[in-house]
Image 1: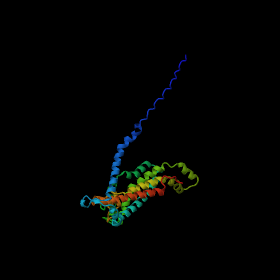
Image 2: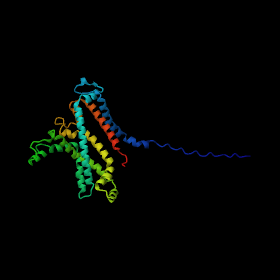
Image 3: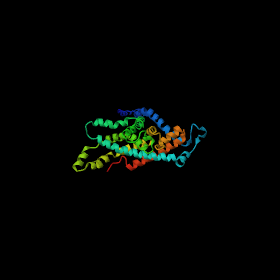
Image 4: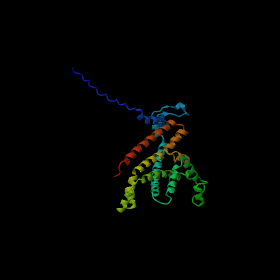
Length: 311
């Protein structure tokens, strides 16, 4: 009698537990509250500015409020000479300030990068103005430029100039005076960034260049500058945006005067919105400033080839 041989079925493979998606999503869930807050504090004001730029909005004259379309922009470009004057001064201010800050910041970074006695103290003194707030910087220079107790008083005591001279109220001296005040705080920014990048330059490159008979200038031109290219491009772009939007120093020093000589576009926007309560037109000017900064930043990064390998 034939016995049936029972063939045991192979055991079923263990079911693989599906990996929980919670651990992968946990980092995003943790940062979600902060991200939503940042989005709300950034996105809402930006959208509001774009919205009000198309409106006639003045809380003191509610009967004139309403949809304006592109009338605010047309008025800025065709009927507002102050807009063009402030835009021209803003370009002049940014060009002069960023250029001088870069030049002096690069020089300071090269100096404090050398080995000398008291280098740590020297670096601290060079970088300390950057730690001072813009309002405090303005207050310091207002006191220094005071016609009764400031620099001009001591110069008059030495026979240089006359008593009662105010550099901030003279149209021929207000621009250089404001430039010097902002240089004091802006130069350390470039010095810090450039010095940080200088620390990563290999000394072997300079030693090889000396063996080949390269002068100090050639070492600087062919080794130092190419290595600092990205740091210089990034720092000048950031500083240009900040200088364009500079309001606190000029507002405290000159208030845009005398006779509107130091009124930048952001300062004009602040006066239009806060003093004149014309928030619709101020929003349109803000939108124009945003587009100008965005366009110039993209063009600058493209022309400078930021992030590309230097040949």
